[in-house]
Amino acid sequence: MGAELLVPAQAEADDVVLSWEGEDVLAVRLPQLSDSLDHILAAMERRHGMPLAELDRKAKQEAVRHLEARGAFSVRHGVETVAGALGVSRFTVYNYLNRETALNREKASEGS
Image 1 (tube, rainbow, N blue to C red):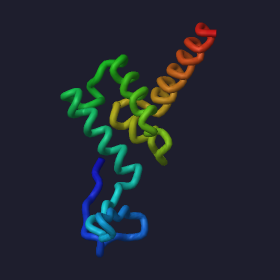
Image 2: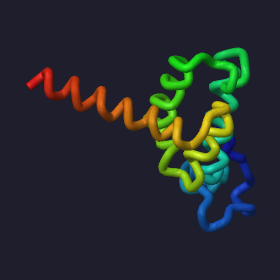
Image 3: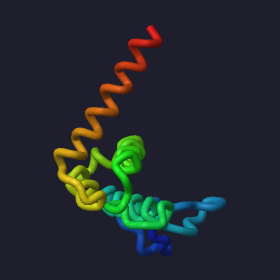
Image 4: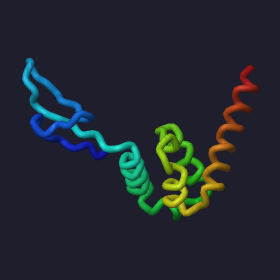
């Protein structure tokens, strides 16, 4: 996810310092959530073997579902970032999200 390893002396307030037997041995600097989204998108492109913008509509809908599960849309400008990566409009991303919500509601009502 793009974390950076540091010596403990370089740790800042938001870094995670790991200790072993009472001694600080390593610091981990976690990326900002928005940087993580870029890493997630790059990993998805590697997995698909092509830019996300070249996926068909069904694969793009699956990508949005996966990204929503990973919290991509809780990031500031997450929808815009994902829309750009998929080569679609923000409106289309919102439609994919709304479609998924409607399907989930339908499944829940069928199970009742």
